[in-house]
Amino acid sequence: MIWVLGGGAFGTGLAISLARKGPVTLWTRNPEQATAMAKERENFLRLPGCPLPDAVRVTADITGIAADTPCLLAVPTQKLRHLLVDQSHSLTGPPLVACCKGIERGSGLGASSVIRDVIPTAPVAVLTGPSFAGDIARGLPTALTLACADQTLGKQLQTSLSTANLRLYRTTDIAGAELGGALKNVMAIACGAAIGAGLGESARAALMTRGFAEMQRLALALGAAPETLTGLSGFGDLVLTCCSDQSRNTRFGISLGRGETFDPAVTVEGAATADAALAIAEEQKLDTPIIRVVAALCKGKLRVTDAMDMLLRRPLKEE
Image (cartoon, rainbow, N blue to C red):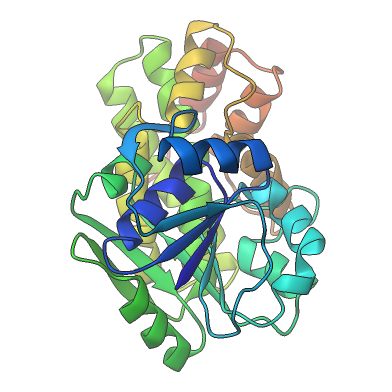
C-alpha cells in the first residue's frame, strides 16, 4: 500500500500511475471532494479525463498509515508545514516523500527541511523532475529523480515507486534535487512573461540559458552537486516547464506578459519561490538578476517591458 496526500492534479496523477502496480490510498483534506471522487472515480476539478483505477481508494481520513508505508506529500510547498503540523500524529513513522517544488517563504527552507523541522524523526525523500500530472496519469513515459540521503531507504523507495511508465533515478543530493525543481519555476515565469509580451522564442532561449546559470550559482552556493543540476531535476525540469503552457508557472508568466489577470485559485509555486530565492541570494551575495526581476514582476512592482530593458542593459561580460 502507498499513500498519496493531496488531491490536486499531481497527487491524483501519481495515485493513478502507482495504482497500476498495487493498491493506493489518495487522501484529500476536503471530505466533500473525497466523497465526489470516490463516487465519480475521477478528479473532475483538478485532473479531468483521467479515471481513477479500482485500486485507488479516496478518503479524507488520514489515520491508519503503517510505519513502513511510503507517504507521498503532493501539496503546495507553502501549505506543507500546515499539513505536517496538522497531521503529525499520523506521520511520525512512515517514510515521507516530498513531491512539491518550491522554497518556503519566510524560512527559506526546501520541502525536506520543512519535514525535518516539524517531524525530526521522519525518514525523508524527495521526488522531483520533469513531469506533468496528465502525462503520468495517462501512462506516458516519464523519468524522475528520487533524492534520499539514506541509500538503503532510497533503493527501497525507488523499487516501490517505479512503474512501467514511471522511471526513477536515485541520488543522495537532496539539496540539488530540491533547488533544481524549485528554481526552474521562477525561470518558467520569466519565459512565460517573454512569450506573453511577444518577445519571441529567442528571448525565451536566452532566459532559459541565463536562468540555468543562476540556478547553478545559487544551488552550488547552498551545497548542491553540479551534476544534479544538469540532470532531470534541474536542466530536464527547466526545459519541460519553460517550453510548455501546461505549466502553471509558464501560464502565469504569459498572463503577466499580456497584462491579463490570472486565476488566483491556481497554485503558482514560482511566485513565492522567487521571493524566497531572492532573499537567499542576497544573503549569499550572489548575482541573480532574473530571479530579482521575477520577484518584482510577481509583486506588480515592474512591467515586463521594463524588466527586459533592465536585463538587456546590464554590463556586457563573458559568458
